[in-house]
Length: 165
Image (cartoon, rainbow, N blue to C red; front, side, top):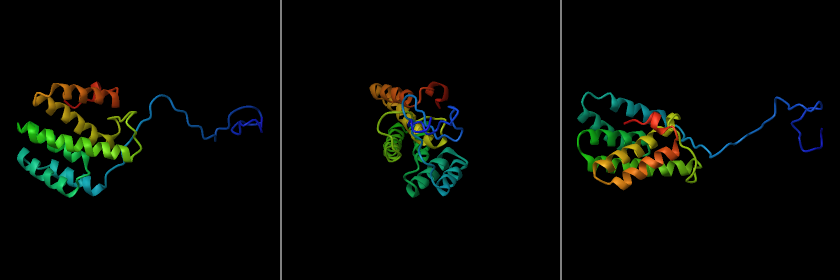
């Protein structure tokens, strides 16, 4: 069978187990790269603070040192929202969302395809988007809340099974 353009076929017509075959079904999936370990260690330390106010302050320090750490923006939004500071929470979530879009584009995302929660490195972006949804709703921006929820499901069809809130 050699010379037929099927170089991965053995002489007996079977496919060689060493064949490098890439099959694609449906939309592409984007996985963000992992942030540096020092960034996540700093966020873990902030999350370990005793009170919500201390966690908020410590997380703000993390964001000021590592503004590209998407999970820290999501945490700020969650902490501010839980404290009733919905305008601040909305702003934090929006920053995390837009920084996440930048990171996705840098990772090859072109506006379509999956960005799944099951990939731990995607969670900061998705958590920011979910916080943006929640805080838009808290501010009465129902249309934005609905758009964000739709985007969550477009990015991860399993969103309802993994949604944080």
